[in-house]
Image 1 (cartoon, one colour):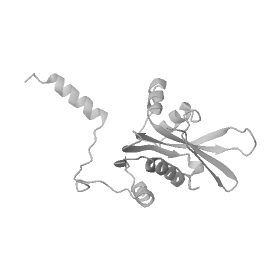
Image 2 (tube, helix red, strand yellow):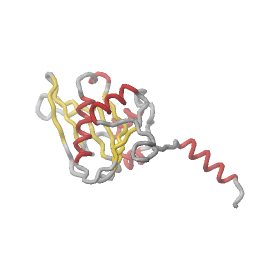
Image 3 (cartoon, one colour):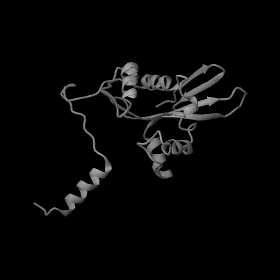
Image 4 (cartoon, one colour):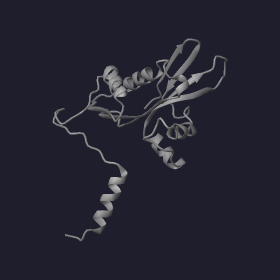
Length: 177
């Protein structure tokens, strides 16, 4: 996918959202994954971080200094796991607390929507959240809704690693049929 960028000025601050893999430092993503607000993630090895980011559409949110050649500072991110054609899974949406309430998260989600709307045969754009506030925001901004079996006859399913490990152990302990 080609790099996409969006710019916005809020008050006297300039911001950039970019899909460039070169702009978002892996160390920043590791800090986000170690942040208490991102309770579903945890830091990972450099090898796994590179693989994860190489196989995702990651949007970095940056505060840009006003002076020429001033480096941008990463302040947020969102990640989509996607085939860029039929499916996207939104995860790891985060903005540092000092930059919240500026509308940056709403803008970040809008940029994600721009990418998804370019997918020619989109079937599903999905995410997981346990926050009712986030559910309302995603419903309002994107038209998402809680899925249940009545949605096109599909039932959303999921499993965590601990359960997979337990099933694997059970399978090893069962005699061959």
